[in-house]
Length: 373
Image (tube, rainbow, N blue to C red; front, side, top):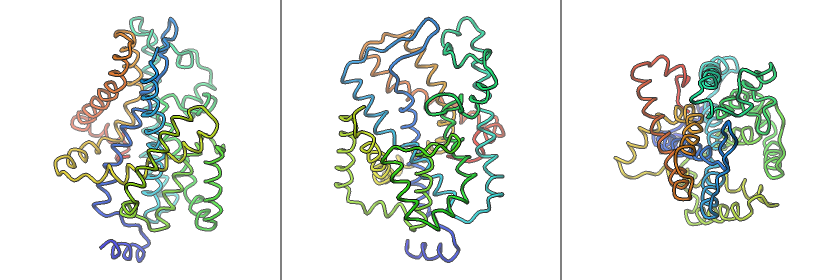
């Protein structure tokens, strides 16, 4: 059956995603979204007006948090860029039509959400009862220069990573940039596939960035890999051919080495391997859900993967500060907070999204670009 689908796709010039594959990708997205939240849940200090609170974390908890947030979960955003490349290139498009669509799905939500949180921080800073939670110097909007305003919307000049004010939106900014370059990327891969692959692999292995505007290297590499996946006519069923024991073993080894080599020479190369193997692992195992009820539940949650991604971050930051201020900071509470805060934020984001979708569908459509991540 899959062979017939592939033959039909070649005849029309399109890459066909079957219904079963579509469901697997949607389930994969919710896993990746949860991992993004855990990446942002990781913190070693909390900032307040009166000074920073450095969390005293026992070694076992420190390593557990590092393993989950900085190793296992780090395949999430590269995975999203891979899927974005796959969905863009699966059918022919023109640059003009694609950019018209991306202005609606990427640029408009980007500007609205970034502006909302800038205004929120400005207002909160002037409310004495809560101003202590909005104290970082770079977030004091009233004192910004034009350069800082530019940085808030583009990431330029905002330090390592070049993140905009609502920093998870760097994904949307980079994705917009990639769509601007989409036809050039396709031309380069089609004309010089081996050269492009070698350059991308070398950049990842040697930790070399391309410095294209604020575009992150990993965004470009995994977006290109999404097109390469299509160009090679690969499908998620092909991932299933990977030996489960070999894949699991290789991924486990890469995770352990990534943790052991923490901040040491050689970690970067191992980290790249853990990202690639991690994405393959989650695509291979976590999307093959057998139970009907469990599958329906995951597919329902997957509807809100993009809203969770868009709405979680600064709410997560504020809740972490509240918990640090109001609750004990011993090991038990830190462990509960590390897992509990993401669970609360994800739940609240989904409930908020459902309410917004139900009562303000137009606003919900604008904020989410009328599409799912």
